[in-house]
Image (cartoon, rainbow, N blue to C red; front, side, top):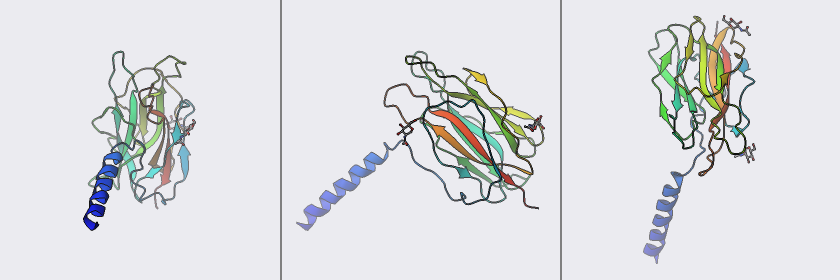
Length: 209
Ligand SMILES: *[C@@H]1O[C@H](CO)[C@@H](O)[C@H](O)[C@H]1NC(C)=O
Ligand SMILES: *[C@@H]1O[C@H](CO)[C@@H](O)[C@H](O)[C@H]1NC(C)=O
């Protein structure tokens, strides 16, 4: 009897392990979410599908100095989703000897790009390129690309797709830089039209004096 019970348990464990691979929306790090931030940067051209997920924040005294994006290439007649995820690379100081990655929910499709870094300084504002909703039978992709401005002033554009148009720039982080991210993600559509990432907001933290 005991051995029957334990083999039933084993099957149950194996089965739930199998199911875990099919969880599409799960939270990654939340270690540093209690860090104080000063403001939230938003833009007004995000799309409407999905829900805001959760903020991810760099460790204390770390600021975003670079980024990488997850982009699905052109599907040639299949369901395009374009930009799926944004990863911020946080660093504690100019030496960039220790880097920490944050990403809100990252979408389901595509490959991560090579990281791009500010030549010096930190990320301070952003702008997104969004394809507007294409109607009932259209193939929505929502966010296609993102640009960041660095405190040292250069503007960096990610290697996204080019449907849609850029909107306005967000406000700038003042006295510090970008230290967190939250994305608005459409749930996996189980074979229907996926748009994945629809909007993003970034958090500004102050530099300690
Ligand atoms: C996300 O938002 C949609 C409406 O936009 C809602 O129908 C759906 O239940 C939400 N999903 C979750 C997981 O909260
Ligand atoms: C943000 O900073 C840039 C570059 O210094 C500047 O051109 C822009 O006007 C600033 N935006 C706002 C809203 O202050």
